[in-house]
Length: 234
Ligand SMILES: [Zn+2]
Image (tube, rainbow, N blue to C red):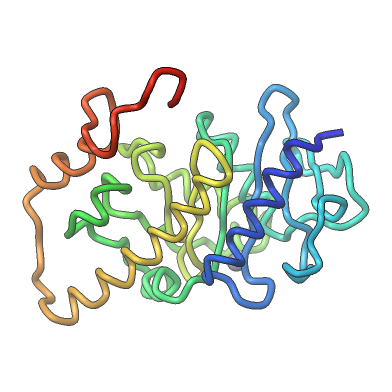
């Protein structure tokens, strides 16, 4: 069962490894089947070159294993929390990519000060608040997801498909697991560029009109980026 879903999760995890964003086992990708209420995710602590379809774990929305012999990723509750809070999300990715982690450890959102950022992330990429002692002690992974969702009070999570978990690292998402991987790659580049920009000019800013121009050039009904699809194509 769940072969297509497991394949989507496997492909995303392998793409994540190929992207160069993860070393060792520091990352995970998942995909959701909302009709059946299940999520396929990387097993905990398994090397990427050992991953195959059988090792992908399928869990229900509470995190109970439905299929698979291995334990799911230790970040499973965070993935589930993102799926619950953001109903349009089809895939979630977590990495410890260097520059995104640097911003997360500094406790700083990544400001949108360039068109590379604006093309994919409409708002600043938010960073979660400090966790309370109670939150750390009780349901740490679950609260991680809750705090992440808390950052999106006024932000559309499908227009800014990523966030930084303070002291930890980035989570990204998309309509599919493949899109979540792509957004993880873009987030790392954006984090790197922002770091360099503020090293050169700590006061760098950008006119918000440019943000909208670039975001809506690639997204929404008036998007003009790329080629006009031929009939039958998306
Ligand atoms: Zn992590």
